[in-house]
Length: 310
Image 1 (cartoon, rainbow, N blue to C red):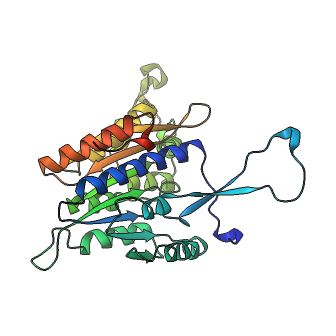
Image 2 (cartoon, rainbow, N blue to C red):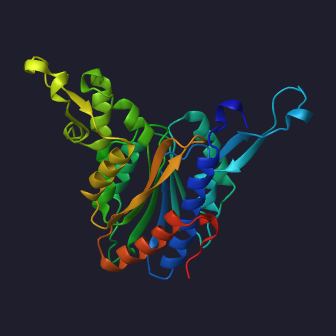
Protein backbone atom coordinates (compact mmCIF):
# COMPACT_ATOMS: atom_id res chain seq x y z
CA UNK A 1 0.00 0.00 0.00
CA UNK A 2 1.48 3.43 -0.90
CA UNK A 3 2.64 5.48 2.06
CA UNK A 4 -0.01 8.16 1.55
CA UNK A 5 -2.73 5.50 1.77
CA UNK A 6 -1.47 3.82 4.92
CA UNK A 7 -3.41 4.64 8.04
CA UNK A 8 -0.91 4.76 10.89
CA UNK A 9 -2.57 5.20 14.24
CA UNK A 10 -3.46 3.46 17.43
CA UNK A 11 -2.10 1.30 20.14
CA UNK A 12 -3.60 -0.32 23.20
CA UNK A 13 -6.51 2.13 23.41
CA UNK A 14 -7.31 1.62 19.71
CA UNK A 15 -7.50 -2.14 20.15
CA UNK A 16 -9.76 -1.66 23.16
CA UNK A 17 -12.31 0.57 21.47
CA UNK A 18 -12.36 -1.54 18.29
CA UNK A 19 -12.77 -4.74 20.29
CA UNK A 20 -15.76 -3.25 22.07
CA UNK A 21 -17.26 -1.98 18.83
CA UNK A 22 -16.78 -5.39 17.20
CA UNK A 23 -18.48 -7.13 20.12
CA UNK A 24 -21.48 -4.87 19.75
CA UNK A 25 -21.59 -5.36 15.97
CA UNK A 26 -21.95 -9.11 16.31
CA UNK A 27 -24.45 -8.90 19.14
CA UNK A 28 -26.45 -6.25 17.25
CA UNK A 29 -26.80 -8.23 14.02
CA UNK A 30 -27.52 -11.42 15.97
CA UNK A 31 -30.28 -9.81 18.05
CA UNK A 32 -31.99 -8.04 15.13
CA UNK A 33 -31.50 -10.47 12.24
CA UNK A 34 -35.02 -11.93 12.55
CA UNK A 35 -36.82 -8.65 13.30
CA UNK A 36 -37.50 -7.60 9.72
CA UNK A 37 -35.06 -4.68 9.61
CA UNK A 38 -32.40 -3.79 7.06
CA UNK A 39 -29.31 -3.35 9.23
CA UNK A 40 -26.80 -0.74 8.06
CA UNK A 41 -23.33 -0.03 9.43
CA UNK A 42 -22.18 3.61 9.11
CA UNK A 43 -18.56 4.61 9.66
CA UNK A 44 -18.09 8.39 9.59
CA UNK A 45 -14.28 8.40 9.74
CA UNK A 46 -13.53 5.07 8.11
CA UNK A 47 -9.94 5.80 7.13
CA UNK A 48 -8.46 3.10 4.90
CA UNK A 49 -10.44 0.35 6.62
CA UNK A 50 -7.26 -1.07 8.12
CA UNK A 51 -4.46 0.37 10.20
CA UNK A 52 -0.70 0.05 10.11
CA UNK A 53 1.54 -0.28 13.15
CA UNK A 54 5.29 -0.59 13.46
CA UNK A 55 6.11 -4.09 14.64
CA UNK A 56 7.79 -4.13 18.08
CA UNK A 57 11.42 -5.24 18.08
CA UNK A 58 13.78 -6.52 20.73
CA UNK A 59 16.68 -4.04 21.06
CA UNK A 60 19.19 -6.87 21.46
CA UNK A 61 18.34 -8.21 18.00
CA UNK A 62 17.51 -4.94 16.25
CA UNK A 63 19.41 -4.44 13.01
CA UNK A 64 19.43 -1.25 10.98
CA UNK A 65 18.29 -2.77 7.68
CA UNK A 66 16.11 0.06 6.36
CA UNK A 67 12.49 0.79 7.17
CA UNK A 68 11.13 -0.88 10.32
CA UNK A 69 8.79 -3.80 9.75
CA UNK A 70 5.11 -2.93 9.84
CA UNK A 71 1.99 -4.98 10.40
CA UNK A 72 -1.50 -4.37 8.99
CA UNK A 73 -4.39 -4.76 11.41
CA UNK A 74 -8.14 -4.61 10.78
CA UNK A 75 -9.74 -1.23 11.35
CA UNK A 76 -13.39 -0.58 12.08
CA UNK A 77 -14.54 -0.96 8.46
CA UNK A 78 -12.81 -4.29 7.91
CA UNK A 79 -14.18 -5.60 11.19
CA UNK A 80 -17.66 -4.54 10.08
CA UNK A 81 -17.27 -6.33 6.74
CA UNK A 82 -16.39 -9.54 8.58
CA UNK A 83 -19.18 -9.34 11.17
CA UNK A 84 -21.35 -12.45 11.42
CA UNK A 85 -24.30 -12.40 10.93
CA UNK A 86 -23.59 -9.75 8.28
CA UNK A 87 -25.00 -6.28 7.98
CA UNK A 88 -27.41 -5.64 5.12
CA UNK A 89 -25.50 -2.58 3.95
CA UNK A 90 -22.54 -0.33 4.67
CA UNK A 91 -21.94 3.42 4.39
CA UNK A 92 -18.26 4.29 4.72
CA UNK A 93 -17.12 7.92 4.79
CA UNK A 94 -13.58 9.21 4.40
CA UNK A 95 -12.39 12.67 3.35
CA UNK A 96 -8.70 11.98 2.74
CA UNK A 97 -8.15 10.97 -0.95
CA UNK A 98 -5.38 8.47 -0.26
CA UNK A 99 -7.23 6.66 2.50
CA UNK A 100 -10.40 6.72 0.45
CA UNK A 101 -8.59 5.00 -2.44
CA UNK A 102 -7.46 2.26 -0.03
CA UNK A 103 -11.01 1.98 1.28
CA UNK A 104 -12.28 1.49 -2.27
CA UNK A 105 -9.84 -1.35 -2.81
CA UNK A 106 -10.79 -2.95 0.51
CA UNK A 107 -14.47 -2.94 -0.41
CA UNK A 108 -13.74 -4.92 -3.60
CA UNK A 109 -12.58 -7.79 -1.39
CA UNK A 110 -16.18 -8.16 -0.19
CA UNK A 111 -18.27 -8.28 -3.38
CA UNK A 112 -21.13 -9.93 -1.51
CA UNK A 113 -21.77 -6.73 0.49
CA UNK A 114 -23.78 -3.69 -0.53
CA UNK A 115 -21.40 -0.79 0.10
CA UNK A 116 -21.82 2.95 -0.37
CA UNK A 117 -18.55 4.89 -0.26
CA UNK A 118 -18.55 8.65 0.36
CA UNK A 119 -15.44 10.77 -0.22
CA UNK A 120 -16.40 13.89 1.68
CA UNK A 121 -16.96 15.72 4.94
CA UNK A 122 -18.33 13.38 7.60
CA UNK A 123 -20.65 15.95 9.16
CA UNK A 124 -22.30 16.81 5.86
CA UNK A 125 -22.66 13.19 4.76
CA UNK A 126 -24.03 11.89 8.08
CA UNK A 127 -26.53 14.73 8.34
CA UNK A 128 -27.73 14.12 4.77
CA UNK A 129 -27.96 10.38 5.41
CA UNK A 130 -29.97 10.91 8.59
CA UNK A 131 -32.29 13.36 6.86
CA UNK A 132 -32.96 11.43 3.64
CA UNK A 133 -33.06 7.78 4.72
CA UNK A 134 -36.58 6.26 5.12
CA UNK A 135 -35.76 4.81 8.54
CA UNK A 136 -39.30 3.75 9.35
CA UNK A 137 -39.84 2.03 6.00
CA UNK A 138 -42.99 2.02 3.88
CA UNK A 139 -45.45 -0.42 2.33
CA UNK A 140 -42.78 -1.10 -0.30
CA UNK A 141 -39.68 -1.36 1.86
CA UNK A 142 -38.80 -2.61 5.37
CA UNK A 143 -37.68 -0.28 8.17
CA UNK A 144 -33.97 0.45 8.47
CA UNK A 145 -31.85 0.39 11.59
CA UNK A 146 -28.34 1.81 11.75
CA UNK A 147 -25.20 1.31 13.80
CA UNK A 148 -23.02 4.43 13.61
CA UNK A 149 -19.38 4.68 14.64
CA UNK A 150 -18.11 8.23 15.21
CA UNK A 151 -14.37 8.09 15.76
CA UNK A 152 -13.01 11.52 14.78
CA UNK A 153 -9.32 12.34 14.57
CA UNK A 154 -9.91 15.29 16.91
CA UNK A 155 -12.84 17.61 17.48
CA UNK A 156 -14.37 17.37 14.01
CA UNK A 157 -17.88 16.21 14.91
CA UNK A 158 -20.36 19.08 15.12
CA UNK A 159 -23.33 19.06 17.46
CA UNK A 160 -25.65 19.40 14.45
CA UNK A 161 -24.51 15.92 13.44
CA UNK A 162 -25.28 14.51 16.89
CA UNK A 163 -28.74 16.09 16.75
CA UNK A 164 -29.38 14.66 13.27
CA UNK A 165 -28.51 11.16 14.50
CA UNK A 166 -30.81 11.50 17.51
CA UNK A 167 -33.74 12.66 15.36
CA UNK A 168 -33.71 9.45 13.29
CA UNK A 169 -34.97 7.40 16.28
CA UNK A 170 -33.38 4.47 14.44
CA UNK A 171 -29.60 4.63 15.05
CA UNK A 172 -27.40 3.15 17.77
CA UNK A 173 -24.32 5.36 18.08
CA UNK A 174 -20.86 4.60 19.41
CA UNK A 175 -18.99 7.89 19.78
CA UNK A 176 -15.35 8.34 20.71
CA UNK A 177 -15.55 11.76 22.37
CA UNK A 178 -12.27 13.75 22.54
CA UNK A 179 -12.18 14.31 26.29
CA UNK A 180 -8.57 15.49 26.37
CA UNK A 181 -9.24 17.86 23.47
CA UNK A 182 -12.06 19.52 25.40
CA UNK A 183 -9.93 19.80 28.52
CA UNK A 184 -7.01 21.35 26.66
CA UNK A 185 -9.14 23.82 24.71
CA UNK A 186 -10.82 25.01 27.91
CA UNK A 187 -7.98 26.98 29.47
CA UNK A 188 -7.86 27.50 33.23
CA UNK A 189 -9.01 31.09 32.79
CA UNK A 190 -11.71 31.97 30.21
CA UNK A 191 -9.80 35.06 29.11
CA UNK A 192 -7.12 32.71 27.74
CA UNK A 193 -9.58 31.01 25.36
CA UNK A 194 -9.29 32.68 21.96
CA UNK A 195 -12.18 33.05 19.52
CA UNK A 196 -11.16 30.01 17.48
CA UNK A 197 -11.06 27.69 20.48
CA UNK A 198 -14.31 29.10 21.85
CA UNK A 199 -16.04 28.54 18.49
CA UNK A 200 -14.74 24.96 18.34
CA UNK A 201 -16.02 24.17 21.83
CA UNK A 202 -19.40 25.70 20.94
CA UNK A 203 -19.54 23.61 17.77
CA UNK A 204 -18.69 20.32 19.48
CA UNK A 205 -21.04 20.86 22.42
CA UNK A 206 -23.81 22.74 20.59
CA UNK A 207 -24.00 25.52 23.16
CA UNK A 208 -21.95 28.12 24.98
CA UNK A 209 -23.42 27.15 28.34
CA UNK A 210 -20.27 25.17 29.13
CA UNK A 211 -18.71 28.51 30.09
CA UNK A 212 -21.12 28.80 33.02
CA UNK A 213 -20.88 25.12 33.94
CA UNK A 214 -17.10 24.83 33.91
CA UNK A 215 -16.06 28.25 35.25
CA UNK A 216 -16.89 29.74 38.62
CA UNK A 217 -15.91 32.97 40.40
CA UNK A 218 -12.43 32.98 41.82
CA UNK A 219 -11.81 33.46 45.53
CA UNK A 220 -12.83 36.96 46.67
CA UNK A 221 -9.25 37.85 47.59
CA UNK A 222 -8.23 37.50 43.93
CA UNK A 223 -10.70 40.19 42.85
CA UNK A 224 -10.21 42.97 45.36
CA UNK A 225 -12.70 45.83 45.14
CA UNK A 226 -14.32 44.16 42.11
CA UNK A 227 -11.89 45.85 39.73
CA UNK A 228 -11.36 42.79 37.48
CA UNK A 229 -13.71 41.98 34.61
CA UNK A 230 -16.01 38.93 34.77
CA UNK A 231 -13.76 36.60 32.77
CA UNK A 232 -10.67 37.54 34.71
CA UNK A 233 -12.51 36.89 37.97
CA UNK A 234 -13.45 33.33 37.01
CA UNK A 235 -11.46 30.10 36.83
CA UNK A 236 -12.17 26.63 35.52
CA UNK A 237 -13.43 24.48 38.36
CA UNK A 238 -14.44 21.54 36.14
CA UNK A 239 -11.96 18.69 36.03
CA UNK A 240 -11.94 15.86 33.49
CA UNK A 241 -14.68 14.01 35.39
CA UNK A 242 -16.96 17.04 35.37
CA UNK A 243 -16.36 17.67 31.68
CA UNK A 244 -17.17 14.05 30.85
CA UNK A 245 -20.36 14.24 32.93
CA UNK A 246 -21.33 17.43 31.09
CA UNK A 247 -20.92 15.69 27.73
CA UNK A 248 -23.19 12.88 28.91
CA UNK A 249 -25.79 15.43 30.01
CA UNK A 250 -25.65 17.07 26.58
CA UNK A 251 -26.15 13.73 24.82
CA UNK A 252 -29.05 12.88 27.12
CA UNK A 253 -30.72 16.15 26.12
CA UNK A 254 -31.21 14.95 22.53
CA UNK A 255 -31.28 11.12 22.56
CA UNK A 256 -34.74 9.79 23.41
CA UNK A 257 -33.54 6.23 24.04
CA UNK A 258 -30.64 5.89 26.44
CA UNK A 259 -27.11 7.25 26.92
CA UNK A 260 -24.89 4.97 28.98
CA UNK A 261 -22.04 6.09 31.24
CA UNK A 262 -18.94 6.03 29.03
CA UNK A 263 -15.87 3.87 29.04
CA UNK A 264 -12.89 6.10 29.82
CA UNK A 265 -9.92 5.50 27.54
CA UNK A 266 -6.58 6.36 29.12
CA UNK A 267 -3.00 6.65 27.94
CA UNK A 268 -0.03 4.61 29.10
CA UNK A 269 0.48 6.94 32.07
CA UNK A 270 -3.16 6.85 33.09
CA UNK A 271 -4.17 10.28 31.79
CA UNK A 272 -7.60 10.63 30.16
CA UNK A 273 -7.64 10.53 26.36
CA UNK A 274 -11.26 10.11 25.35
CA UNK A 275 -14.60 8.71 26.40
CA UNK A 276 -16.37 5.95 24.48
CA UNK A 277 -20.09 6.77 24.65
CA UNK A 278 -23.03 4.63 23.60
CA UNK A 279 -26.41 6.16 22.80
CA UNK A 280 -29.52 4.82 21.14
CA UNK A 281 -31.97 7.11 19.36
CA UNK A 282 -34.85 4.63 19.35
CA UNK A 283 -37.23 5.47 22.23
CA UNK A 284 -39.24 2.21 22.05
CA UNK A 285 -38.98 0.47 25.45
CA UNK A 286 -38.06 -2.94 23.97
CA UNK A 287 -35.36 -1.38 21.77
CA UNK A 288 -33.97 0.57 24.72
CA UNK A 289 -33.90 -2.51 26.95
CA UNK A 290 -32.10 -4.62 24.33
CA UNK A 291 -29.55 -1.95 23.40
CA UNK A 292 -28.89 -1.15 27.05
CA UNK A 293 -28.37 -4.82 27.93
CA UNK A 294 -25.89 -5.45 25.14
CA UNK A 295 -24.02 -2.14 25.29
CA UNK A 296 -23.71 -2.19 29.10
CA UNK A 297 -22.07 -5.59 28.95
CA UNK A 298 -19.74 -4.53 26.12
CA UNK A 299 -18.71 -1.33 27.92
CA UNK A 300 -18.10 -2.98 31.25
CA UNK A 301 -16.70 -6.36 30.21
CA UNK A 302 -13.00 -6.87 30.71
CA UNK A 303 -12.85 -9.21 27.71
CA UNK A 304 -15.24 -7.45 25.38
CA UNK A 305 -14.06 -9.01 22.13
CA UNK A 306 -15.18 -12.46 23.27
CA UNK A 307 -18.64 -11.55 24.55
CA UNK A 308 -21.64 -12.83 22.65
CA UNK A 309 -25.37 -12.43 23.37
CA UNK A 310 -27.11 -15.34 25.06
